[in-house]
Amino acid sequence: MLNYQVNLDKKGIIFDIQRFSVHDGPGIRTIVFFKGCPLSCRWCSNPESQCMEPQVMFIPSKCIGCKKCYEVCSNGAIDFNLPSRVDQNKCVKCGKCVENCYAGALNLAGNTRTVKELLLELKKDNIYYRRSGGGITLSGGEVTAQPEFAEELLKGCKQNGWHTAIETAAFTSQSVLERMLPWLDLVMLDIKHMDANKHLEYTGKPNELILQNAKLIAQFGVQLIIRVPVIPGVNSDENNIRATANFATSLKSVKELHLLPYHRLGENKYEYLGHDYIMKGLQPPTKEEINKLKELVEECGLICKVGGID
Image (cartoon, rainbow, N blue to C red; front, side, top):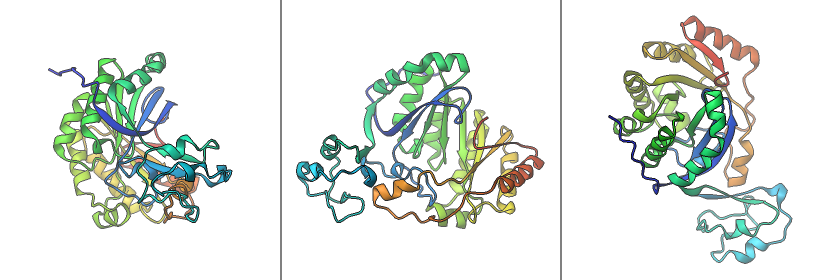
């Protein structure tokens, strides 16, 4: 029997809350984005999610040159010779520069929240969850990088009767998953590549643990959807997509595989953080290319959707 006692004071670090989403699980949903990720995918559209700690991001187009940020920073972290404006090695994430940036050129990606605070925020849209069959999706970053916080938040969501889902790469220990799975209705698991060496090359980690955990989730019985971010020149070849689909069909509870076409919407964020975007110049796959891969997945007996849940 499940213990619904929730530690409302448990703290975690998130970097965004997105409301009224219809592509990250059934119905109308609110997505909570967790900070921290053990992977470092070259195409990541949320680079601010990878580091566990808050980070100051600089948007050059908004800067009016008032230099108020320089005046209030007592650690010498503001450097006008840096494209990112902020020396992350000196920055202590106090937020003073952000608070005094009236033009909104500086933003703090990541803040600490308690489970209680988040549940109060999520309750604002309770009527939409009820009417649409929606709920809460925890995303990131990587949800399992903050396991205790995620577990307590999921407990609180179930206590409120909400449908719960996570978007994950499942690069974590079996014990973490076993703690979270009882509180989940849906797991959307990203498989970046079936080749372990290429997975290591492009994400910084091998894929054996991910594939093992996919089997664990399937055996547990929670609804599992396999997703593939389709990155041209990385994992978009037919052999890899077919291998991923065949693996998905071996998981008896899996009925769907979703193709998530690469996009460039997060490219500017690398500049805001002072990072280089390795995939610069890469073009998204064409509609024809995606449709061909979709047909291949369907030939393997799976329902295939593009861009998430319709």
